[in-house]
Figure 1: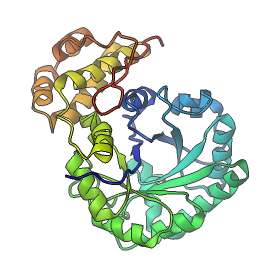
Figure 2: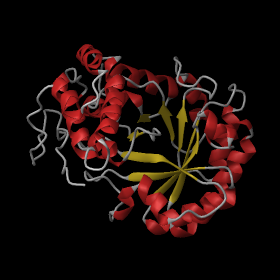
Figure 3: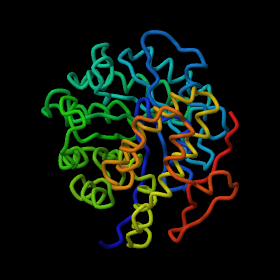
Length: 348
C-alpha cells in the first residue's frame, strides 16, 4: 500500500450502541473527525430540551464536542417537514452545531411509522424534508446533512434520492452502500456510491462494511469518495480510525490491534456505564460490544465464548483480563502521533 490523500472519518450513529460514552471512548485518540448521535425521533411536536440532552449530552459543552474536541452532530429522524424544521431550530438553540437527517434506518418499526429508509421510496419527500430543515437553519448559520441508503426495496431511485437531498440543501450526504431490503448483508455496493458521487457536487461520504484498512482502500477506490463513515468496523477494531489516519500520513500499516487495547476500552466503558446503569445491563452491553469484536479477532472470539453466560460484572471484567491503564490520568501517545485511548473520569 502507498500513502493516499487525506480524507475525513466519521463515526456512524448506531441506534442502541453509540451513546455519549462510546463517542467519547472511540474519539479519544483524535483520529475521528466527527461523530453523529443516535436519532432523535420527531413526530409532530416540538420536543422538550431533555429529549435532545438525553441523546446528546455534548450539547451542554461550548463546542458540542466530545472531551477530545471531536464535533458531535445531532441526528433527527421523521417525515413531517414542519416538525423536523421546528425541532432542528430547537436543537440549534440548545447548542447543536450541525443537524443530520436520517433517511437510512432499516428498522421495521421505524419504517412502519414512516421514518428512516421508508422515505426513499419517494425521492420528492426526501427533497421536501431536507429543504424545510435547511431553510429553517440557514438564518441561524448551521448546516443540515443527510444519510441515505441505496433505496428501499431496490436501487432504481438511488440517484434520484441523492439528488433530492442535494437539491434540498444538504451540505454533505452519507450513503450506506445497501438498500433497506439488503439490511447489513454483504456485500456493500461501494460502486453504487461512486455513481452518486459522480452526479453530486456536494461531498459524498461512503459507509458500510469498512472493517479493515484494506476495506477502506477498496471503498475509496470504488466509490471515489475521500471521506468515510465507520460503524460496526470501529467497534470491532477501536484503532481502525487511527490506522487509517496513520496510513494517510505515513503510507504505513500499523500492527494489529492487540487484545489488551480492546480489553482496555471495554473496561473503561464498564467503569463509565456502571455509574448509572444496573450491572446486569452493563454486562449485556459489554457482550454486545465484544460480539462485534469476535468476528475478526481470535482472542476476542475466545473471550466471548468463555464469557457469554456470565451475568456478574466483576466476573465478566475479570474474564477480560487485567488492564493496568484504565485508572490513569495522562493520555499515552503511540508511534502514529495519536494519543492512546484516554482513561476517563468515572464519576457519573
